[in-house]
Image (cartoon, rainbow, N blue to C red; front, side, top):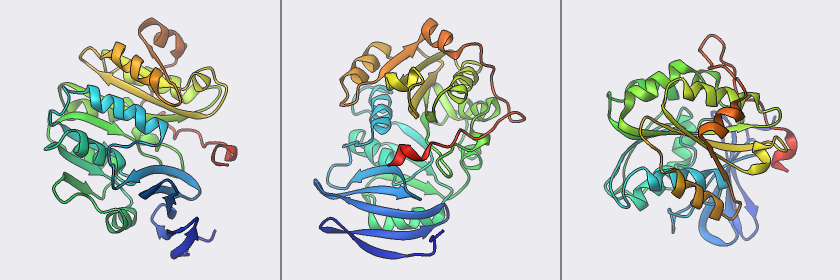
Length: 289
């Protein structure tokens, strides 16, 4: 498979770092337009983008949508307590630190070799209150104190698929336990036609949270292509009008579904339990070409 390679290769006018990590072959590829920016790619699948000069810049559309959720989770600039399940290049933790100084954050990333690579090549601001723990996401979540988090972001992929044990009602029970009253859970989901996984995840969240919204490209929602969707859940009312405005203003406009339209979109799907959970579907090879 070629995963034993480690070192650097040329990409455009800068060097790309290529290194084996626990999850496969990781590449940190320079951004031609941003001198200190890199895209993290694992086994050919783009994972995240970081600009060390501008950590508030979010390049990937799904991360921009998660950024909107972060922006609206509390008044502007107010520090929050955030848990990130899945670290990647720590893009969203850096975003929170840049936009909400003095926030306290816990990142749970299973791939210890990836964490070491990212810390070495894309060092964190030493003043940021970001703790990174190398552990399984669900095991790491179990160690978060009850009611500690204002925000839990789930963005975990193994081989471009969300592991089954992070798709169930039992998993969301622990998310709810870790959330403070009125806290927000946001999950990055990936699916394609016939969208059975996405519908099941909405039904699962609806079984545990009173307020839901889904943000996605309209073509994904119509089942026209494989893509990402951000599911937002809380027991407090969500800022739907502003979330809708921001998503519609993105370079790749997104649509927000909620209320009756989201229930209809779910199409009678049932909540997923640990016993029935399966990993999200693998993306078609054409997605990354």
